[in-house]
Length: 64
Image 1 (spheres, helix red, strand yellow):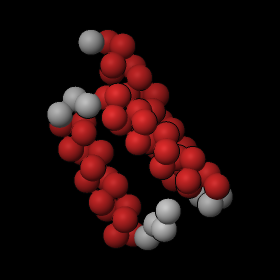
Image 2 (cartoon, helix red, strand yellow; image 1 turned 180 degrees about the vertical axis):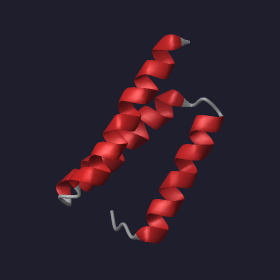
Image 3 (cartoon, one colour; image 1 turned 90 degrees about the horizontal axis):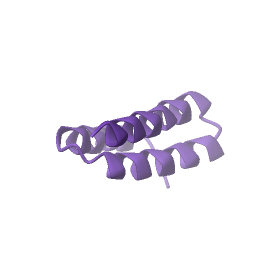
Image 4 (spheres, helix red, strand yellow; image 1 turned 120 degrees about the vertical axis):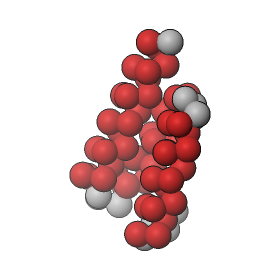
C-alpha cells in the first residue's frame, strides 16, 4: 500500500462516509488494516490514530 497525503485525504473521507452511515463494522476492519500498514511503515502516531478508531467502532457497535 503506497500512502501519501492524497491517500490519507481519501482514507479520511472514507471514514467520514462510513461514520455518517453508522457502518461501524466496516470502520473496525478498515481502520485495523490501515493501522497495520502504517505500523509496518513505522508510522506509530498515525497507526495509533487508526487503532483508536477500531476501539471507537467496537464501542459504538456494542452500544447499539
